[in-house]
Length: 250
Image (tube, rainbow, N blue to C red; front, side, top):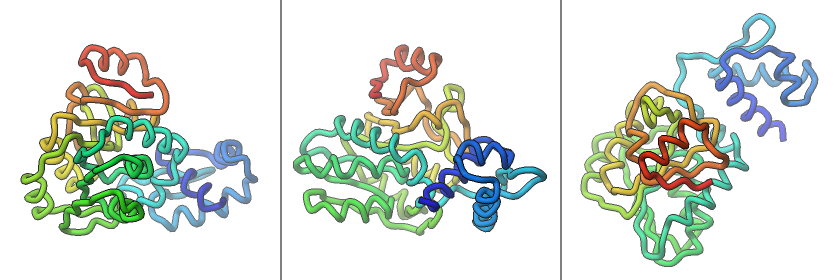
């Protein structure tokens, strides 16, 4: 319970920039003293720092660890994973990205026949290993602990020899101007290569990702094959989706 609150609080602070103690206390429905104790632990993680009357997100840190990202908006991610799996057919070969939302597809994919998964995500490899019906092609490379995935030249070379029926990809931010964006250079390079593996690029993103932009752009929004999310995107995104003839699953 407390660990889930800490993870959600950390993401809340990162999303809002600077937050007061009172705001955190009201939002998470705990006392100010509890918030102070929680913040002592969160500041030790290194992604936030205390300021007068509250706490602020730090801008000089890398992506959140996978365990934190997986716990954030977990209900929405489960819904998205179930919906995304409906785009996969028996005997498909698909690429699964390193995003935490993508992992939620695996229990549903295991119910299909002849599914082959290509991935550089250690978390995806581990979760897929629980289901004997899934065949996994694992891409090696240099392990990145923050994203729980393998990156580097060898990973890119392996991707250049692979073709898939569909690519399921995540993004740190999604904007109409900059498209799909990510915070990590090496991870963005993998994503740029991955989108060449198929004509069907499917974005999995909960509603918190829309209207945000991170450091590195890796794919244009209007070239997506489909978008899977848990609630209706803002109007401007709906217009862009309709104009580009993108499938939308909600």
